[in-house]
Image 1 (cartoon, rainbow, N blue to C red):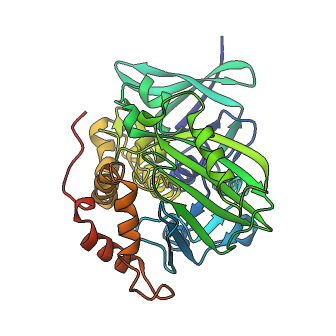
Image 2: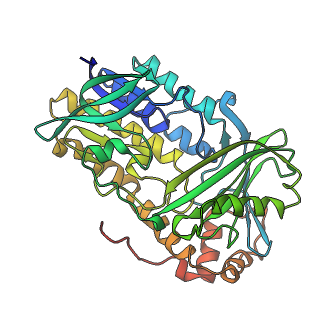
Image 3: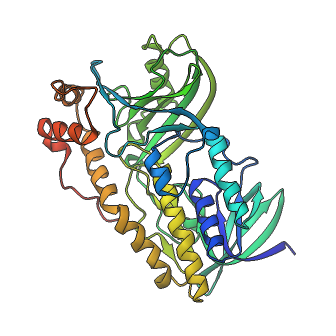
Length: 398
Protein backbone atom coordinates (compact mmCIF):
# COMPACT_ATOMS: atom_id res chain seq x y z
CA UNK A 1 0.00 0.00 0.00
CA UNK A 2 1.36 3.46 -0.88
CA UNK A 3 1.87 5.95 1.92
CA UNK A 4 -1.11 8.27 2.34
CA UNK A 5 -1.49 11.85 3.56
CA UNK A 6 -4.62 13.84 4.29
CA UNK A 7 -5.14 17.61 4.12
CA UNK A 8 -7.64 20.29 3.17
CA UNK A 9 -5.68 21.72 0.23
CA UNK A 10 -2.81 20.30 -1.78
CA UNK A 11 -0.95 22.70 -4.07
CA UNK A 12 1.08 21.38 -7.00
CA UNK A 13 4.12 23.50 -7.80
CA UNK A 14 6.17 25.78 -5.52
CA UNK A 15 6.60 28.70 -7.90
CA UNK A 16 5.19 32.14 -7.07
CA UNK A 17 1.56 31.12 -7.72
CA UNK A 18 1.82 27.89 -5.75
CA UNK A 19 3.54 29.39 -2.72
CA UNK A 20 1.08 32.30 -2.64
CA UNK A 21 -1.88 29.92 -2.91
CA UNK A 22 -0.52 27.68 -0.16
CA UNK A 23 0.18 30.58 2.21
CA UNK A 24 -3.21 32.23 1.79
CA UNK A 25 -5.10 28.95 2.06
CA UNK A 26 -3.26 28.25 5.31
CA UNK A 27 -3.90 31.79 6.54
CA UNK A 28 -7.58 31.06 5.92
CA UNK A 29 -7.47 28.08 8.29
CA UNK A 30 -6.84 25.23 5.83
CA UNK A 31 -4.39 22.37 6.37
CA UNK A 32 -2.12 22.66 3.35
CA UNK A 33 0.53 20.52 1.66
CA UNK A 34 2.68 22.09 -1.07
CA UNK A 35 4.43 19.62 -3.40
CA UNK A 36 7.37 20.47 -5.66
CA UNK A 37 8.85 18.01 -8.14
CA UNK A 38 12.30 19.60 -8.20
CA UNK A 39 15.04 19.13 -5.64
CA UNK A 40 15.39 22.87 -5.06
CA UNK A 41 12.78 25.62 -5.09
CA UNK A 42 13.61 28.33 -7.62
CA UNK A 43 16.01 26.20 -9.66
CA UNK A 44 16.28 26.03 -12.53
CA UNK A 45 14.71 29.41 -13.25
CA UNK A 46 12.52 29.72 -16.33
CA UNK A 47 11.99 33.44 -16.95
CA UNK A 48 13.73 36.78 -17.39
CA UNK A 49 13.02 37.60 -13.73
CA UNK A 50 11.47 41.06 -14.13
CA UNK A 51 8.65 42.49 -11.99
CA UNK A 52 7.53 45.97 -10.99
CA UNK A 53 7.73 47.32 -7.46
CA UNK A 54 4.06 48.31 -7.55
CA UNK A 55 2.97 44.77 -8.38
CA UNK A 56 4.98 43.33 -5.50
CA UNK A 57 3.39 45.76 -3.07
CA UNK A 58 -0.08 44.97 -4.43
CA UNK A 59 0.59 41.31 -3.57
CA UNK A 60 1.56 42.27 -0.03
CA UNK A 61 5.27 41.67 -0.62
CA UNK A 62 7.77 44.25 0.57
CA UNK A 63 10.81 44.37 -1.75
CA UNK A 64 13.89 42.86 -0.13
CA UNK A 65 17.43 43.63 -1.33
CA UNK A 66 18.30 40.02 -0.57
CA UNK A 67 16.44 38.77 -3.65
CA UNK A 68 16.74 41.82 -5.91
CA UNK A 69 19.56 41.64 -8.44
CA UNK A 70 19.04 45.09 -9.98
CA UNK A 71 16.78 48.12 -9.65
CA UNK A 72 15.41 49.25 -13.00
CA UNK A 73 14.68 52.86 -13.99
CA UNK A 74 12.93 52.04 -17.25
CA UNK A 75 13.03 50.27 -20.57
CA UNK A 76 14.94 50.75 -23.81
CA UNK A 77 12.97 49.73 -26.89
CA UNK A 78 15.22 48.99 -29.86
CA UNK A 79 13.73 48.89 -33.35
CA UNK A 80 14.91 46.49 -36.07
CA UNK A 81 17.09 49.17 -37.67
CA UNK A 82 18.68 50.06 -34.33
CA UNK A 83 16.67 53.15 -33.36
CA UNK A 84 16.24 53.31 -29.61
CA UNK A 85 13.60 54.75 -27.35
CA UNK A 86 14.33 55.15 -23.65
CA UNK A 87 11.21 55.12 -21.49
CA UNK A 88 11.82 56.22 -17.92
CA UNK A 89 8.57 54.85 -16.61
CA UNK A 90 7.90 51.33 -17.82
CA UNK A 91 5.38 50.95 -20.67
CA UNK A 92 1.98 49.64 -19.66
CA UNK A 93 2.17 45.88 -19.30
CA UNK A 94 5.93 45.79 -18.81
CA UNK A 95 7.26 43.41 -16.18
CA UNK A 96 10.19 45.47 -14.93
CA UNK A 97 11.06 47.62 -11.95
CA UNK A 98 13.25 45.02 -10.34
CA UNK A 99 15.21 42.17 -11.81
CA UNK A 100 14.85 39.38 -9.28
CA UNK A 101 17.07 36.55 -8.24
CA UNK A 102 14.40 33.91 -8.71
CA UNK A 103 16.39 31.28 -6.86
CA UNK A 104 16.10 33.43 -3.73
CA UNK A 105 12.71 35.02 -4.43
CA UNK A 106 10.93 31.70 -4.87
CA UNK A 107 12.54 30.39 -1.69
CA UNK A 108 11.40 33.53 0.12
CA UNK A 109 7.80 32.93 -0.96
CA UNK A 110 7.95 29.26 0.02
CA UNK A 111 9.40 30.28 3.39
CA UNK A 112 6.44 32.58 3.98
CA UNK A 113 4.11 29.68 3.20
CA UNK A 114 5.96 27.44 5.64
CA UNK A 115 5.71 30.13 8.32
CA UNK A 116 1.93 30.05 7.83
CA UNK A 117 1.92 26.34 8.61
CA UNK A 118 2.20 24.82 5.14
CA UNK A 119 3.94 21.45 4.85
CA UNK A 120 6.35 21.42 1.88
CA UNK A 121 7.34 18.17 0.17
CA UNK A 122 10.34 18.35 -2.17
CA UNK A 123 11.10 15.95 -5.02
CA UNK A 124 7.41 15.20 -5.00
CA UNK A 125 6.10 15.20 -8.56
CA UNK A 126 2.40 14.84 -9.24
CA UNK A 127 1.83 11.76 -11.42
CA UNK A 128 -1.97 11.63 -11.40
CA UNK A 129 -5.17 12.82 -9.78
CA UNK A 130 -7.51 10.90 -7.49
CA UNK A 131 -11.20 11.15 -8.33
CA UNK A 132 -14.42 9.93 -6.75
CA UNK A 133 -17.70 10.17 -8.68
CA UNK A 134 -16.07 12.55 -11.15
CA UNK A 135 -14.76 14.90 -8.46
CA UNK A 136 -11.06 15.50 -7.80
CA UNK A 137 -10.23 14.39 -4.26
CA UNK A 138 -6.44 14.40 -4.27
CA UNK A 139 -3.30 13.54 -6.21
CA UNK A 140 -0.82 10.72 -6.53
CA UNK A 141 2.80 11.70 -6.07
CA UNK A 142 6.20 10.16 -6.74
CA UNK A 143 8.05 11.34 -3.61
CA UNK A 144 11.75 10.60 -3.24
CA UNK A 145 11.32 7.60 -5.52
CA UNK A 146 8.26 6.17 -3.74
CA UNK A 147 4.59 6.51 -4.64
CA UNK A 148 2.18 8.11 -2.21
CA UNK A 149 -1.33 9.52 -2.19
CA UNK A 150 -2.37 12.92 -0.89
CA UNK A 151 -6.09 13.14 -0.21
CA UNK A 152 -7.43 16.66 -0.16
CA UNK A 153 -10.73 18.48 -0.32
CA UNK A 154 -9.28 20.81 -2.95
CA UNK A 155 -6.34 20.60 -5.37
CA UNK A 156 -4.69 23.78 -6.69
CA UNK A 157 -2.67 23.17 -9.85
CA UNK A 158 0.17 25.69 -10.10
CA UNK A 159 2.47 23.53 -12.21
CA UNK A 160 2.97 25.78 -15.24
CA UNK A 161 1.20 26.58 -18.51
CA UNK A 162 1.47 22.93 -19.62
CA UNK A 163 -0.18 21.80 -16.35
CA UNK A 164 -0.54 18.05 -16.42
CA UNK A 165 -2.48 18.16 -13.16
CA UNK A 166 -5.19 20.28 -14.76
CA UNK A 167 -5.25 18.07 -17.85
CA UNK A 168 -5.60 14.90 -15.78
CA UNK A 169 -8.47 16.57 -13.93
CA UNK A 170 -10.29 17.09 -17.24
CA UNK A 171 -9.72 20.82 -17.74
CA UNK A 172 -9.14 22.11 -21.27
CA UNK A 173 -5.45 22.99 -21.52
CA UNK A 174 -4.90 22.58 -25.28
CA UNK A 175 -2.79 25.15 -27.13
CA UNK A 176 -1.82 25.71 -30.74
CA UNK A 177 1.85 26.22 -31.61
CA UNK A 178 1.01 29.80 -32.61
CA UNK A 179 -0.13 30.39 -29.03
CA UNK A 180 3.26 29.50 -27.57
CA UNK A 181 6.68 31.10 -27.65
CA UNK A 182 9.77 28.96 -27.38
CA UNK A 183 12.31 30.73 -25.19
CA UNK A 184 16.01 30.51 -24.54
CA UNK A 185 17.98 32.63 -22.11
CA UNK A 186 21.64 32.92 -21.19
CA UNK A 187 22.98 34.41 -18.00
CA UNK A 188 26.02 36.26 -19.35
CA UNK A 189 28.98 37.99 -17.70
CA UNK A 190 31.30 40.59 -19.17
CA UNK A 191 28.55 42.48 -21.04
CA UNK A 192 28.56 46.24 -21.53
CA UNK A 193 25.03 47.48 -20.96
CA UNK A 194 23.15 50.14 -19.01
CA UNK A 195 22.83 48.62 -15.57
CA UNK A 196 19.50 50.27 -14.68
CA UNK A 197 17.56 49.74 -17.92
CA UNK A 198 16.01 46.63 -19.39
CA UNK A 199 16.21 46.40 -23.16
CA UNK A 200 13.62 44.96 -25.53
CA UNK A 201 14.64 44.36 -29.16
CA UNK A 202 11.83 44.14 -31.70
CA UNK A 203 11.59 42.66 -35.16
CA UNK A 204 12.57 39.72 -37.31
CA UNK A 205 15.60 38.91 -35.15
CA UNK A 206 13.02 37.05 -33.04
CA UNK A 207 10.13 36.05 -35.37
CA UNK A 208 6.79 36.60 -33.67
CA UNK A 209 8.48 37.51 -30.38
CA UNK A 210 11.33 39.69 -29.16
CA UNK A 211 14.80 39.59 -27.66
CA UNK A 212 15.63 40.96 -24.23
CA UNK A 213 18.57 42.10 -22.14
CA UNK A 214 17.84 42.31 -18.40
CA UNK A 215 20.72 43.56 -16.23
CA UNK A 216 21.67 41.53 -13.17
CA UNK A 217 24.41 43.78 -11.78
CA UNK A 218 28.20 43.44 -11.78
CA UNK A 219 28.42 43.24 -15.57
CA UNK A 220 25.96 40.36 -15.80
CA UNK A 221 22.67 40.15 -17.66
CA UNK A 222 19.92 37.77 -18.68
CA UNK A 223 20.06 37.77 -22.48
CA UNK A 224 17.25 35.87 -24.10
CA UNK A 225 14.75 35.49 -26.88
CA UNK A 226 11.21 34.25 -27.40
CA UNK A 227 10.13 33.01 -30.84
CA UNK A 228 6.56 32.18 -31.83
CA UNK A 229 6.27 28.41 -31.82
CA UNK A 230 4.73 28.19 -35.28
CA UNK A 231 7.71 30.13 -36.69
CA UNK A 232 10.39 27.81 -35.38
CA UNK A 233 11.27 26.23 -38.70
CA UNK A 234 13.69 23.65 -37.32
CA UNK A 235 14.97 22.11 -34.10
CA UNK A 236 17.34 24.50 -32.39
CA UNK A 237 15.97 27.53 -34.26
CA UNK A 238 15.67 29.71 -31.16
CA UNK A 239 19.27 28.97 -30.16
CA UNK A 240 20.51 29.76 -33.65
CA UNK A 241 18.67 33.09 -33.64
CA UNK A 242 19.79 34.00 -30.11
CA UNK A 243 23.42 33.19 -30.89
CA UNK A 244 23.18 35.30 -34.06
CA UNK A 245 21.66 38.18 -32.08
CA UNK A 246 24.47 38.09 -29.49
CA UNK A 247 27.20 37.79 -32.11
CA UNK A 248 25.87 40.87 -33.92
CA UNK A 249 25.93 43.06 -30.79
CA UNK A 250 29.41 44.29 -29.77
CA UNK A 251 28.15 44.90 -26.23
CA UNK A 252 27.42 41.20 -25.86
CA UNK A 253 29.64 39.21 -28.18
CA UNK A 254 32.69 39.30 -25.91
CA UNK A 255 30.72 38.06 -22.90
CA UNK A 256 30.68 34.60 -21.40
CA UNK A 257 27.68 32.34 -20.87
CA UNK A 258 27.33 31.25 -17.24
CA UNK A 259 24.05 29.35 -17.45
CA UNK A 260 21.36 28.39 -19.94
CA UNK A 261 17.60 28.23 -19.44
CA UNK A 262 15.16 26.91 -22.03
CA UNK A 263 11.39 26.73 -21.93
CA UNK A 264 8.17 28.00 -23.41
CA UNK A 265 5.37 30.36 -22.46
CA UNK A 266 1.72 30.58 -23.41
CA UNK A 267 0.68 33.69 -25.29
CA UNK A 268 -3.06 32.99 -25.25
CA UNK A 269 -5.14 34.72 -22.57
CA UNK A 270 -6.80 32.57 -19.96
CA UNK A 271 -7.71 28.90 -19.76
CA UNK A 272 -11.35 28.44 -20.86
CA UNK A 273 -12.39 27.53 -17.31
CA UNK A 274 -9.92 27.58 -14.44
CA UNK A 275 -11.84 25.36 -11.99
CA UNK A 276 -13.65 22.05 -11.75
CA UNK A 277 -15.09 19.94 -8.95
CA UNK A 278 -12.34 19.95 -6.33
CA UNK A 279 -9.71 21.50 -8.67
CA UNK A 280 -8.40 25.03 -9.30
CA UNK A 281 -5.59 26.39 -11.46
CA UNK A 282 -3.38 29.38 -10.67
CA UNK A 283 -0.59 31.34 -12.32
CA UNK A 284 0.72 30.00 -15.62
CA UNK A 285 -1.51 26.92 -15.25
CA UNK A 286 -4.50 29.27 -15.58
CA UNK A 287 -2.71 30.94 -18.52
CA UNK A 288 -2.70 34.42 -17.01
CA UNK A 289 0.68 35.23 -18.58
CA UNK A 290 0.74 38.60 -20.35
CA UNK A 291 0.33 37.52 -24.01
CA UNK A 292 2.38 40.44 -25.32
CA UNK A 293 5.36 40.52 -22.96
CA UNK A 294 5.33 36.93 -21.71
CA UNK A 295 5.60 38.27 -18.15
CA UNK A 296 3.92 36.02 -15.62
CA UNK A 297 5.15 36.82 -12.11
CA UNK A 298 2.67 39.62 -11.45
CA UNK A 299 -0.43 37.59 -12.30
CA UNK A 300 0.98 34.46 -10.68
CA UNK A 301 1.15 36.32 -7.38
CA UNK A 302 -2.37 37.71 -7.84
CA UNK A 303 -4.08 34.48 -8.86
CA UNK A 304 -2.19 32.46 -6.27
CA UNK A 305 -3.47 34.72 -3.52
CA UNK A 306 -7.03 34.60 -4.88
CA UNK A 307 -7.00 30.82 -5.29
CA UNK A 308 -5.76 30.25 -1.75
CA UNK A 309 -8.32 32.59 -0.24
CA UNK A 310 -11.26 31.13 -2.19
CA UNK A 311 -10.17 27.55 -1.50
CA UNK A 312 -10.04 28.23 2.25
CA UNK A 313 -13.45 29.94 2.17
CA UNK A 314 -15.05 27.07 0.23
CA UNK A 315 -13.60 24.52 2.65
CA UNK A 316 -14.93 26.48 5.62
CA UNK A 317 -18.44 26.34 4.15
CA UNK A 318 -18.04 22.67 3.17
CA UNK A 319 -18.51 23.10 -0.59
CA UNK A 320 -15.67 22.61 -3.09
CA UNK A 321 -17.89 21.96 -6.10
CA UNK A 322 -17.14 23.62 -9.41
CA UNK A 323 -20.06 25.95 -8.82
CA UNK A 324 -18.60 27.09 -5.50
CA UNK A 325 -15.02 27.39 -6.78
CA UNK A 326 -16.26 29.48 -9.74
CA UNK A 327 -16.03 32.45 -7.38
CA UNK A 328 -12.28 32.32 -8.02
CA UNK A 329 -12.72 32.13 -11.80
CA UNK A 330 -15.03 35.16 -11.75
CA UNK A 331 -12.68 37.01 -9.43
CA UNK A 332 -9.53 36.81 -11.52
CA UNK A 333 -11.36 37.36 -14.79
CA UNK A 334 -13.04 40.43 -13.35
CA UNK A 335 -9.67 41.90 -12.39
CA UNK A 336 -7.47 40.93 -15.34
CA UNK A 337 -9.27 39.29 -18.26
CA UNK A 338 -9.91 42.55 -20.15
CA UNK A 339 -6.25 43.47 -19.75
CA UNK A 340 -5.11 40.04 -20.96
CA UNK A 341 -7.40 40.28 -24.00
CA UNK A 342 -6.11 43.76 -24.79
CA UNK A 343 -2.52 42.56 -24.79
CA UNK A 344 -3.49 39.45 -26.74
CA UNK A 345 -5.02 41.63 -29.46
CA UNK A 346 -1.86 43.72 -29.57
CA UNK A 347 0.27 40.56 -29.74
CA UNK A 348 -1.80 39.16 -32.62
CA UNK A 349 -1.15 42.32 -34.59
CA UNK A 350 2.45 42.73 -33.50
CA UNK A 351 3.51 39.31 -34.80
CA UNK A 352 2.41 40.33 -38.31
CA UNK A 353 4.10 43.73 -38.41
CA UNK A 354 7.07 44.20 -40.71
CA UNK A 355 10.39 45.57 -39.56
CA UNK A 356 9.58 48.77 -41.44
CA UNK A 357 6.37 49.32 -39.48
CA UNK A 358 8.11 48.58 -36.18
CA UNK A 359 10.74 51.16 -37.07
CA UNK A 360 7.97 53.68 -37.73
CA UNK A 361 6.36 53.00 -34.35
CA UNK A 362 9.61 53.76 -32.53
CA UNK A 363 10.27 56.81 -34.70
CA UNK A 364 6.73 58.06 -33.98
CA UNK A 365 7.84 59.29 -30.56
CA UNK A 366 11.07 60.96 -31.67
CA UNK A 367 9.64 64.40 -30.81
CA UNK A 368 9.03 63.45 -27.19
CA UNK A 369 11.41 64.23 -24.37
CA UNK A 370 12.94 60.80 -23.82
CA UNK A 371 13.94 61.58 -20.26
CA UNK A 372 10.34 62.36 -19.32
CA UNK A 373 8.44 60.05 -21.64
CA UNK A 374 5.83 57.95 -19.84
CA UNK A 375 4.23 54.66 -20.79
CA UNK A 376 0.81 56.18 -21.57
CA UNK A 377 2.43 58.71 -23.94
CA UNK A 378 4.30 55.93 -25.72
CA UNK A 379 1.06 54.00 -26.19
CA UNK A 380 -0.77 57.10 -27.53
CA UNK A 381 2.00 57.87 -30.01
CA UNK A 382 2.20 54.26 -31.20
CA UNK A 383 -1.58 54.12 -31.58
CA UNK A 384 -1.56 57.29 -33.71
CA UNK A 385 1.16 55.93 -35.99
CA UNK A 386 -0.06 52.33 -36.16
CA UNK A 387 -3.78 52.09 -35.22
CA UNK A 388 -3.98 48.52 -36.54
CA UNK A 389 -2.00 47.46 -33.47
CA UNK A 390 -4.94 48.39 -31.23
CA UNK A 391 -7.93 46.57 -32.74
CA UNK A 392 -10.89 44.74 -31.24
CA UNK A 393 -10.21 41.19 -32.38
CA UNK A 394 -11.03 38.47 -29.84
CA UNK A 395 -9.56 34.97 -29.62
CA UNK A 396 -11.61 32.17 -31.11
CA UNK A 397 -13.49 29.98 -28.64
CA UNK A 398 -11.68 26.73 -27.93
